[in-house]
Image 1 (cartoon, rainbow, N blue to C red):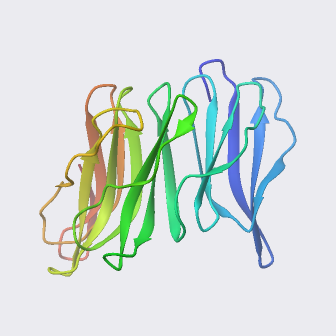
Image 2: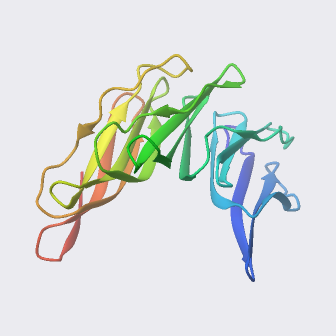
Amino acid sequence: FNNAGQGVIVWEELTGLSIRVLWAYFDGATLHPEAELASYAGQTAVATNGTDFMLVWNYGRIYAAPCTNGGVLGTPAAISDWNADAPDVASNKSGYAVAWRKYDGPTGQQRIFANMYSASTWATETLVDTVPGHGYYPKIASNGSGYAIAWQKYDTVAGNHDVYGTVSSGGTGTATWQTPVLLENLSGAALYPYVASDGNGYAVAWTQDDGSGAYSVYA
């Protein structure tokens, strides 16, 4: 929901062997009828900048469409190359940023990429996961200025799953991403991270295998 109590819902629907993305607008009092956003698509996410909204989904590439606080949907745009999935979106109160996983041809591995939306324009996709190994389950958050991404990483040398994170230098298309940082160093697998901000810094939580097969939440 935005600051005025209006909202947008976006979800995937599976009917038989067909999957599609649907969305609906809530004007603060009435939930309007659902409509198809994309056929043969899924993996949805949505965020608000406090006024308007950004809807995101996967159709082999990551697509995004802005929506006004009056429920007027903008033109969808492809913001990634092909072989992308698992998108997540956040806003810094003016623009938006999306993170996703994509097959990286030069390395032959699944890596984490991102794109930023500012001044009504998407930049180009950027590789943020520069650490060898496969990346999974990216999550993104904003502190109101820049962005942070956390993801699960398979260490091909140690044969274990870790959690990595990175932060951006700002919230526009010219921003850069810092070198990824290993956020934990325990012997068991670290899985399914989530990231959030208090408006200043960031915190990351994940599921941690303590090595005995028992799982706990760490941060």
